[in-house]
Amino acid sequence: MKAEYIPPKRAARAFNCPNCHVYAKQSWYFMGGASSENGFGTQYHNEKFLVSDCENCSSPTIWLGEKVIFPIHSSAQPPNPDLPEEIRQDYEEARTISNLSPRGAAALLRLAIQKLCAHLGQPGKNINSDIAALVKEGLPSGVQKALDSVRVIGNDAVHPGSIDLKDDRDTVNTLFKLVNFISTKMITEPKEIDELYSSLPQEKIDGINQRDGGS
Image: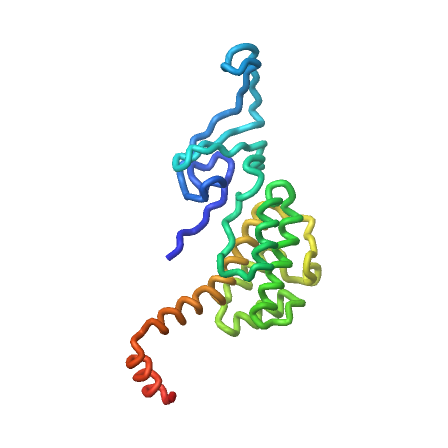
């Protein structure tokens, strides 16, 4: 089972590092500075800035308050590699701006969800009805609850790119998870099952077809 992605959070002891993406322990420091390259001279200290140092890759993540300001992107989980290219581009663009503009990232991710629904054979015009149809096709019903919880489906958010003024980092992180979750359940897992089945010896497949009344 794939490990859960834990997004970066200020003062958390561990999370998936924005630099190496590995879940790792983080060491925290207040940021300081000096007027000389060797660290001496006039000292500067500002408690608004924090640095978390990753135990796995030793790369820093720089925070201003609750926001990650370096690296500029990658605070969200990477996209499912089985996403269609156009949808993956929207996802990656949302990752790039998610720290600076959660609302902009949320709009891109809603668009990605609707494109994904269209890719899966739905009209791609209304997230509510599209997800409901996918649930009937085997998508876990919990997805609908998750969509409701982030105010994605409803009368005020049924069009691609619509923006909820209350969108925040938690909402955006949930949307990232939803895109990957839907694509995993509806694209990746069926593909893996087909690959497993096709790897069986032909005589076994013939026997299964005879058992099931196939040719």
